[in-house]
Length: 311
Image (spheres, rainbow, N blue to C red):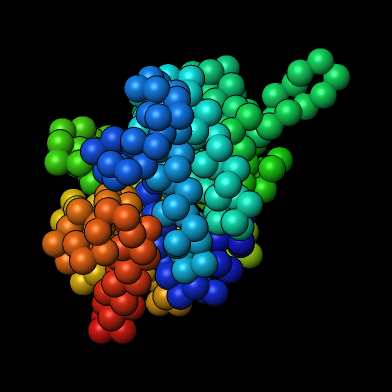
């Protein structure tokens, strides 16, 4: 799957993943009204609204980006109907030949991670049959419990030719409370560097053609740390959140890429899916929110390309 992701990045010339993180405040009123008319002001109605919202965005961007990243919490908040919309979104995106990165941030003791890995990337045994659960192509994994929590995902990735992105240095403001802490037995180096080294080690044993299918999450909001981690993990793809709404710009991102112009994929969520609410794209209006999302992708693509050309 890492080979497919890279192939689609080259074909679209867009190292971009669109975060499908629907919140009701992003969903245009006409979508909500239609869903509530059909399903009531219920969890089912909310799930229908976010599904229709996702579908229109995907219909407008699937041919110009390689991947999408649905964040599962935005669906879980609507209970079982929300999870059904999550699965529906995954299936629709895969039917459009998009690579799907499930932003689930799972990681637990061995048996629990085995269940998470089976449910999201692999198959589960049901009587005499094996069935896929959510069936994403990649998922995000929290490494805090160590190899016990990560190895079950790696095992399933090897079986299914899929991949993971391990949290190394996240984009949120308080990430440094733990991730930047110096480790005494590592010559005072920060924890995120040690995690990055472990990702590189895992990755060496699970390679695609040029890059590993064990990648890392490193936030765009910490460019200097990203520069260090790029050197530590030369063969790991880096998923970079924090572009746009969280402050990251193309000029901050060039060092996340290797000299071959590959090695990173930049995430934008509300900056794309709620573009119509921004002044820059307000002329599209709520009725053409999908077209506004496409315009935001095109602008993001140009911004990144300019940064890479000027590095």
